[in-house]
Length: 497
Ligand SMILES: Nc1ncnc2c1ncn2[C@@H]1O[C@H](COP(=O)(O)OP(=O)(O)OP(=O)(O)O)[C@@H](O)[C@H]1O
Ligand SMILES: [Mg+2]
Image 1 (cartoon, rainbow, N blue to C red):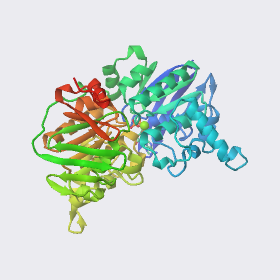
Image 2 (cartoon, helix red, strand yellow):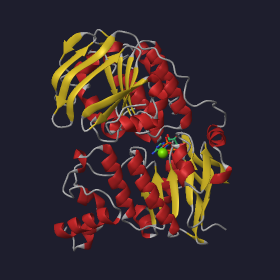
Image 3 (tube, helix red, strand yellow):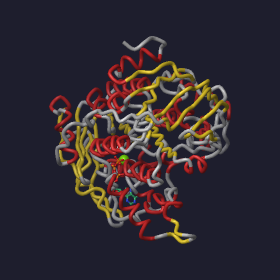
Image 4 (cartoon, protein in one colour):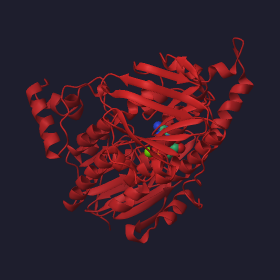
């Protein structure tokens, strides 16, 4: 018997069997990859283990004894802790309050001691070698990668025996991800059990000791990592082969300039940006994380104030707010679906048509026919896995939520697509479909600005890449010269070779 076993776990939601007689086993010291396409049941399994969901049936054993989990507190008490895919931090609370939510406010006779909280927070940063963030900053003021780091620290602070990372690296930069991998390896060396969920196969290969593959709510394989090659894993996940991963690169760049930025600055985050995006071009934005890439995208979607000049399709414009931008034919597909992209309580249909209202209004009436066409087209294009268009967005799996965000933005039929880390949390099969869609948009003459935390994607998808450093454009890497090494070279001020 393995040290840890989940047996015959079944869990249904209205209309969906998320887990169907599923198994999961691990030994102490193992780092187990839990792999599966969007909606396969991975997060549901984790939520059963962490007491968020009650399974309809099944048993859990740890060191030969049955584990009875009666809720989230009970799970933590029994040594199970998780970094959740959908961040659980409370935006209005500070860093320190979030990290120790529910731990110190009760421990200190019902009152929070701020000195104690501050000390614990700094200790935690120190212990795991993380750059210190002011404990009293509100979480809402932090960029997504920092929030994800906090989420990780919050889980680590609980000293669990079984530690779960549900797409904990999806928003992290290469450097932050390798920090986390070192920590995970240390934890495994101490004999902890690690469950690691990710859609980045290279990361899984490098880190995990075994892999369990889920498909449609049940386990279809359990193999030592060295016996599993990437193609085979993808085939197991999807139940079919997908062939080459990235589409053949082609260049559709035309002369027409869609976006022209001249000396654009924004506070100290964006300095003197000069950049052209042409029709048919897929222009990547590279550089180390947090060098102004997010601000560049925000500037083009009216989300930050800028100085300098922006021309859209040859016309001087002031991008005051997202509404003006949408009217100019610009769409932003954001990184953080929870906060910016999606209304969780509304249906897939409502989310998709929200931004596209102009296109489907007939006078003051909404054309239902048109609405249905658009929604069906988007569900099909991105193979959104759901019972029906009326399914509530909040009940979709993480990757499927991301696809709704894409559908929502693309339903406005934009000419200029700002794609900011759009494949975050999306499975390999769907990523491949997304890359094809991007290529098709380029062929139709749309301009695409593309950012990804996954450098392989930048290299394989873009025609040209501008590299940012400290809010400036440090240089540009074109066509044949595009490579990981050259992006890094340019970001430290050298020339691409
Ligand atoms: N609270 C819920 N209510 C209704 N259905 C749900 C709920 N949570 C999950 N589901 C459904 O259960 C299925 C499995 O979802 P789950 O979140 O476990 O997938 P996943 O493997 O984690 O996918 P991803 O890679 O996209 O995160 C999906 O069909 C999803 O829509
Ligand atoms: Mg999930």
